[in-house]
Image 1 (spheres, rainbow, N blue to C red):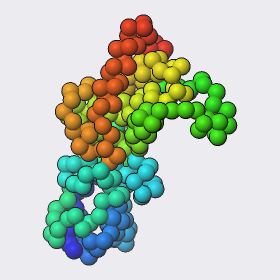
Image 2 (image 1 turned 90 degrees about the vertical axis):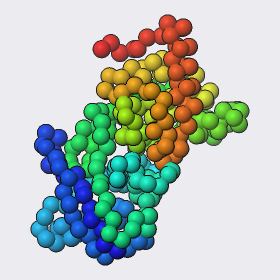
Image 3 (image 1 turned 180 degrees about the vertical axis):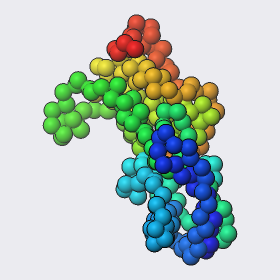
Amino acid sequence: MKLNLRIWRQKGPQSTGKLTEYPLPDVSPDSSFLEMLDLLNEALLHKGEEPVAFDHDCREGICGMCGLVINGIAHGPEAATTTCQLHMRHFKEGDTITIEPWRARAFPVMKDLIVDRTSFDRIIEAGGYVSVSTGSAPDGNAIPIPKAKADMAMDAAACIGCGACVAACPNTSAMLFTAAKVGHLANLPQGQTERYQRVVDMVDQMDHEGFGGCTNMGECRAVCPKEISLDFIAMMNGELWKAALKGVTPSQKR
């Protein structure tokens, strides 16, 4: 099928970007969205033009690298789907597809469709390590955990850190991402020692990175490829209240 692509092109972080149109014929409906971009880049290289820069890695919906805003929706029109899992059969002959990077102050555009998401890494780093000695892997796995708690921890751990929640939120909030990372360890016995210091430090780092506040609009949940529940945001707010009652303050002075 024939498509018309409108793609954000930007040479660097300090450059001014713009949407550039590219006609693309002979796209197979069975190809993935990233394979379609590969096809475009092959055509651009053949004409001696610079290819479109975009992030990708596993192309299996696991790594979270392939974040694109497609026709105004983070990861595109299909629910619970990463960009790399989106196939061209969900579009029609002659469609115009607008492709943009994540839009957030904390995710500056590096080039074209690539943004710097190291702010997420710094939030995770702020959470620190667990100090509980679990021994070898079999010993660690032998620690009794109630099934309800284990299921909740696994639901939170499903977050791949793609940033779609930030891209979709009108406030560019990272609450769903941070809450998932907090909720993972808060529901496990290994995470109890630093439980309250962890949530305070991670939220403090999130605010320091420039992410917006959460106003419970739910846009984050709607585009999350792993369907992380908003319940984790409520849980994290509860953890913050408990930490405040215990007098826990951020370990890093700003």
